[in-house]
Each structure stands twice: as C-alpha cells, then as structure tokens.
Length: 612
Image (cartoon, rainbow, N blue to C red; front, side, top):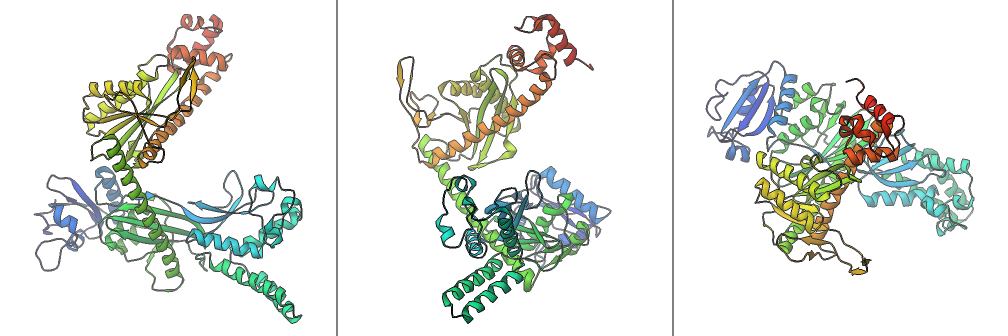
C-alpha cells in the first residue's frame, strides 16, 4: 500500500498494478504500469497541490494501492483479473454492438445476386453456405449507390427467389439494361456466372480490364458518330469508377491491421473496429461503453479490454486516433510485434476517418435509442402510476411440455434495454403436473428471495398472464418480504371469440394491477405498450429456448431406451415429472403406467441406473 493519499513516497519503480479507491474502500479504477511510481505521478496536476488531473478521481478517490509484479505481462494479467473481480465503475467494459454494412454474393443460389447485409465477421467459406462479402461501406446510402452503379455495368438480378421463380416476362429493369433476366431464361447459368465473377472483380477493386473495354466501346461509338451509344458507355464507365470509390477503404498492402475509430459525447463513447487480414477486410464491430477518462487513458483501457488476456488475436498493426497512455508498455505486453500507429495522413488516415465516421453514426443512433427508451419508461410510469425512479424491470414466463418438465425464465431490462447479466433460468421443482399458476409463484419467490439476500431486487416485476398469475406473484412477494417491488400482470391482446355459448369480446393488451377491479387496456401505439411487449416477448423467447434445450436432452436420454417412443416417453414424464423422477421410480411404480408393463419397467430401471 502506498503512503498517504497521492503520496508516491515508497512506491516501487517496478511493473505492477494500481487501484484507486474511495473512502469506503470501493475500487474505483484499476490500471497497470511499467513503472508504478512514474505512472501514479502522471495523474497529479503540475504545481504540487496534490490534486488529480482526472476530475472523477480527484473528487472520489481517497487512496491508491499498488501491487508489484515481476513482469509487464504479469501486470496485464493481474489487471484483467482485478477488473473482473472488482468491476470498477471507471474501467472500460466494452459491449459489442451493431455490425457493419456489406454487400454479399451467395454462390449457393442458382443465379446469385448482390444483397445488402450487416455482418460482424464477413468471411468466405463459412459452414452452411458459400458467400463472399464486399465492403465496408460507411452508410446505407453508399451501399445503395454502389448497387445502382454496379447494375449499370454488370446486369445481375436483384429480385428475391420468390419473385424470380414466378415471372413470365422480363421486368422493366431488363428493358433499362439493369438486369439480364435469368427469370425467363434470357441468359443461361454459365453466362450468368461470368457476370457474377465480373461483379466480384469490380467490388474487389480489379476494374482495369473492364475499364479498358468500356473506354474502347465509348471511343469506338464516338468515332462512328453514335453519340447516344457513346454516352451510354461513358455513363457505365463513370458508374464503374464510382463503384470502386464508394467501397470505403481497401488497403494496398497485405498487413494484418485493426483500425479503431473513436466517438464521444459526455460519458458515452463508441469505438468502431475495422479488421484487415492480409489486406482483406474480415471484421467490423462497434463497442460502446461509459467513461470519463481522457482520450489517451481511455484508448489504453480499450486496447487492454479488446486484446488483453488472449480475447482476440493481436494484429501486426493497430491504427489509432491518438497515442494511448503507456503505449510502449502496451506494445510489449500485447506481443506479436504489434505497432501502435497514429497516422498523419494518407491511406491509413482515410481508414481511420471511415472507422471514426461509423463510430459517430453509432453514437447518434444510440442517443436516439436511449431517448426513446427513456420516453417509454416515463410513459409507463405515468400510465400505471408507478415509482418515478423505475429503472429495472424483471419479467417471468413459464413453459412446460404437457405438465412434464416445467421450466421458467426471468429476463431483466435496465433503462429499457436487455440486461443479459440479469437473465435467469429455472427448473420448477415443487409443482406436480401442469399448474402454471403454482409454477409462477415458485419461480417469482425464488427470484425475490435471492434478490433480498443479495440486495438485487428489481423495481417492477411483470408476470406473463392475467389476474391469477398476478395473485400468485403477489403471494410470492409477501412471503419473500420484498414489499418495495412493484407487480403487474400482462395479458396478451385477444380476438373476439365464443366459449361455451358466451361471447368474449376482443381486447387490446391488458395490464392487471394489484387491487384493481378491472384490467387497464394499453393503447395500441403507445411507447409504454411497446416496451412491455418487448419485455414479455423476450421472456417468452428465453423460456422457450431453454425448454427446447431441456426437452431435447430428456428425449435423447429416454429415447435411447429400447421400447420407449414418443407416447411412452410422454406418459413417463407426465407421471414422474423428469428423467430424474423416472430414474428414482421402482419397477412396480413404472409397471403400472399404461403401455409399460413389468418387462419394460425392468429395462428402464436397468438402462437409467447403468453405471451407478
């Protein structure tokens, strides 16, 4: 431990890790250094008044602890461990976000077409299909412009199979020279394949042959005074050149390189990463996080979070918007002979500009999304008269297979966004048969009890269902003593129908509130309704996914028993609830099940208990 706060007396000059702590000992920030004393000294303002250059540390940090390591590599590994252990609020924790805009050719199609897609890892030869990706593109408009220009030069189809397979005559695009009309066999597969390869060469930047051909045609037509035809070839030549220019950046060398663009607004930051391997674009991804660190400190943390601990392969070169703090240390500990480059112009600067533009676009998109979610939460609070501080919503959904093997899910939304760290799956343990109400009570009770113990309660619980499900959830809340948690039931919209001669009118989504005599119908286009539907649908998806996984596991275990098919399997699970229940049953208990009998019962016992 260093001496008094901000004193560097006695701090080692060796490599190590430092931890800034608050008054209560909470770890606020963890960093690594080649020289601990010099690194900690660098945080202090010039002038010797003891204040720190970083505002949040100057305000909240009361002490700094240092841990000496033998090597810089050990410091990197220890830093990673301590960040995972303490989860400091000011360390960068990257979250993956939207992918990049690409064009894709699917060679598995009979007549391949170019598709506008988003892709995180555009790689050729993926299992399940043969695709080739081209890009990256900065904006959706750039992709559409490139497609428009390319079709003038290489007339590939752009309609889906469902349209192409039902056409009896060419469309208008064929008349305009933008499509070769494979739909009505005006071009055969070998000739069309040549067009596809020509398009691929153009998108890969290889346009010399086609450029020469178009220029020759243009000059030939002009020489014959066929000016309209010459203008056609001129327009196609210009479109060809725009196609290549619109593709963003294609490095001329074969270096393995990642390019990191940075955009910031307040505490919000986005890093957009473009990866090139052997000169080919291979990956693009946005990572967003909150941080008040200066750019140099932040970039140091970003590189550690992205490449430290073997999270991903370190390229030969990292192109950055600014020099990170402790850059020499990073180059050493990341290994692979990596070079950190801050360009001052040229091709690398253009690559960095493209990454930065996409980081800014993603930041704007996220800002708009945040605003929408805040408005939806505010609308929900007002509509249902909830606590204005509403932030965390948990939603529960129960799924079962005809009463056998009942499972449930809990999803958590924080400030209107899925918080996957708060997702939970439950195997219902204490409910016999098909009783969704009792199952809902059990899982809500288990979740709230744990929340009370760990201080991790939501602000609102949403149960999928109506008054009966809500009543069981309220019983669970009372037993857990979690009175501060709000509770509502959300029942799906229903169409008009007749049951037992009684007409049941149509209704919108309905919210059941504790103590209310009638449910509240949510307006169809309200932001509050959309938020609750998203939460409920996510809980249902999560429960169904878990149920299918468990069902597959159960079926494979029971189906491997000679004489057990779907009917007998269902009968066993309905009676004993799970494979474990079947395994614990005696021969006599199994034999009385319909279609089982004594001989098959002995086979079941022998099979499930084999190896014990």
